[in-house]
Amino acid sequence: MEDLQKKFTKLASDISSLPEREMRLSHLKTYLRTLDEESIAKLFAKLYDKDTKHRGTAILKGLLVSPEGLVDALGDEKYKMTYLASLELKLEKVSRLFTDLPPHKQGMHGYSEEEEAKMEFVTLGERRAMAKTNVKDKLDRLLSDPDVMVINNLLNNPRLTEIEVLKIASKRPNSPKTLKTLATHRKWSKRYSVMKSLVMNPYTPPRISTGFLSFLLLQDLVEVVDNTTLHPQVRAGAEELIEEKRAG
Image (cartoon, rainbow, N blue to C red):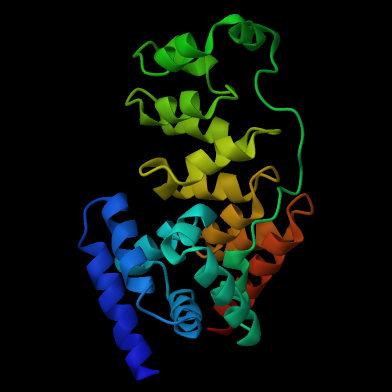
């Protein structure tokens, strides 16, 4: 156990010293491939027993929000074996990281308002270019765009504010790909209000929501549990965290 604590402390320290997300993912990938599946499962369990107030812990949890990132870090075979190890060890917080279930709700997404619907007659190339402009009115009209690259260009646009980002995060219905793009964005995914909005959106993939749960405050976790529109896996994860926080 002491050796595992040392490994975790060193990993968190090394990760937090790197400036870019891509560099952190690369280091995590290299490190995890030196461990066996049971050690990885236990290391992740240690991670999710830690408070996100610590910078290294928060960064590590942020890297694991995306299921694709975890698959890439471990490789297909080790991914499957680590999942099995987490089940055998009864590490539910860890095993949830290895499930990528569809959103609890699904439906049509994209432009819905009559005025916004006119945007569908603008070519995709034009919309992608518009998302990079500094004209506020054009940016507002693109918030419901179904194209992931348009959304990504919007999120990278310095003119976009948190108010507009929250409109994307809370829009219902919305595309899982759009919400996943926001959930892994290097800037906006770190905002508490954005994390909460994504978790509370039943159109967010439950794997993404689960990855954000440990960042939420107690009162917001209670809100998650009480929200029957959310996936049972998300609500179960929130309930488990509530019990831990109240016991601690």
